[in-house]
Length: 251
Image (cartoon, rainbow, N blue to C red):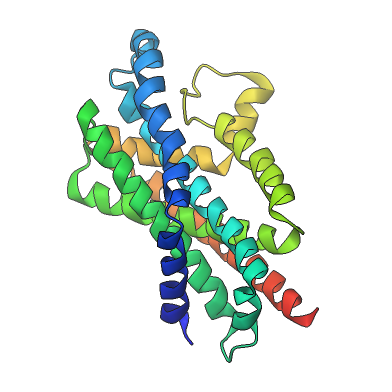
């Protein structure tokens, strides 16, 4: 049993429970369609012409959290039906188990992000940086989802049930989302709020994604910094998830 086998197994579970995809994509689609239509009119006065294009990067990050959080719920369901423990006793490396779980969440994120991007075409959203920009966006989404998937998997291994897990995830996701530039530009903020927003690593990710969508020229320095930041974050989350899984085995 290797990473591909585990990934295939997790994908089968996901599509047998397709409601998890529907539920995690529904909220961002509503934000994209309804919120952008309402708030977009007020944003034109401060220089934002296409508000849908402006909030799309933040909603892609929100989709990543939703898809990867549902992967944590899957972990609890697998424990309930016993399949989680059957995988643990199989002759497979623990890193392969974590990687199979994480890559399934990444794949789900790409499906949902693709749906959002298709919907955004109806609102005249285009990637101004062209084909290279689209490739960079895809890689940034991959690394963002990889980090979040590792984080949510580790958290699901730390908490006893899905009720506490969902409560903790809401407590994490909402502050991260609202204390970022997902919905509003940060140049008008001041004081402690501005510091909190700028220290949020997802602010940096969202800003780079937004620049790749809205601007023709690619800010190589900013893109490189975000890639390095995400590489460190991915290493930390994957290492934590692997540590928690090994601890689960030793119990």
